[in-house]
Image (cartoon, rainbow, N blue to C red; front, top):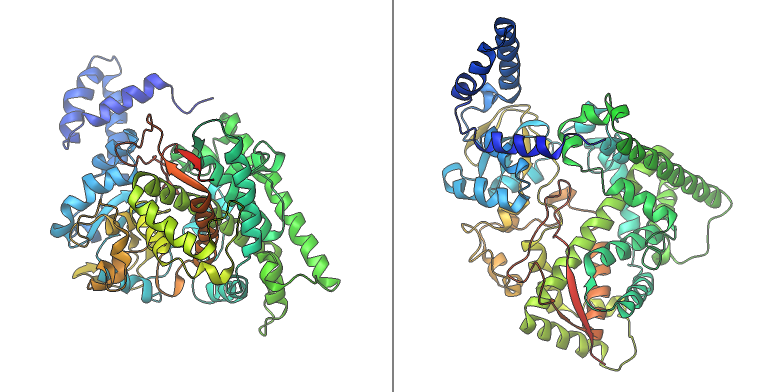
Length: 540
């Protein structure tokens, strides 16, 4: 059963797009005449007036934020109903008003009215003054109600503050600050090569990278073999994808009642909840198995090849405060690592391969750097951890690719704990605040020719370093709460990308939808391109 019919969608789209900015006249001229024709005109008018009044109050800008410039609710709904992506909204609604707002503007979003921040110095203040700008307790309010909150859990490293956050970070730190598992990355890359070799023509690299990173986070996260690169239709691959691909469905995020109270009306959505229950059963089974192994004396595997769950359990057992994570807390962190290590890493590599394919000069320069380090014999050669440090130009390419295509378009919301100021604007206590990554990365007031792909922006003494604030670039967040898995993701990418460059020449098919520029989708949780097909031509 679908939410609304296609006819209703088209009708709603045309109504919203034609509303303009005068809902009172719209009501008077469009709705009232039809009500008068009804024999229940007075009752109908009263009900309609009540509905309009209730809707108005729901969307009305709070009094304490009326001193700020704002993006109108109608503008946001037009954009959402027209299925525009985050970059479309950024270019139409945010960036044209940057100078007018000094990078601080209010808008209505999923959780009500929020202040969108795109001023680098204000961003720096938010990220460093975590006592004044703690993370918003979104999940405390939702209490496991919809698929997303059931998946992420009530508390994790991203959503918690103060002691709860420090406890999790302390236990997770050893897992992410050990030597990277380069051997495992190499094994997984070789599997990806097998699939590329089997392809007859262009490769759907976006899908293949998603399978590659799912295998990586499964093995390195908790020692579980999804084997999705070779068997994309495997039971657990389908179960995980059934959940991960649907947690961000627009209608269920903006109308949580459809995912909770009214869930019995949506049997297809119920199946997603059943898949999550099944996946949670797997996670809990693995956690208990790992705990039992440690209780028996652990394993003899080198630390740099141990999975993250094992390292976190060991760190928790050795915690001086004797406050290890519970099984539920461990599950929540594993799911967080899955989302961060799966979609965001695959999205980043997808973007890098696209920009290499459409910039042959950049591809040639990156290839030469790789050959200087790994040689050019026909057989596969996998980079060591030490060799991964010898790819400075490839690293610049990666940084520029995720400037133009950041894996996430915004950071998790924060809330002002006191009355304060940002970029000269008064921010009242209790205000929700969102850091807008895309608007920072595409801002012509901050970057020269921001839509141009130019890896030299990240050279020593280059454009980024010469900026008044380096907080114009935030693909992994910043401050004390910068993404804990950043180095893990970058190492995984360097192994795969250097190996791909060494083996294949990259190009776009003639009929690529990205031929005239990269095309993004309208996802709500991550920021990804539309289907990406790439030609892989063997060099040897």
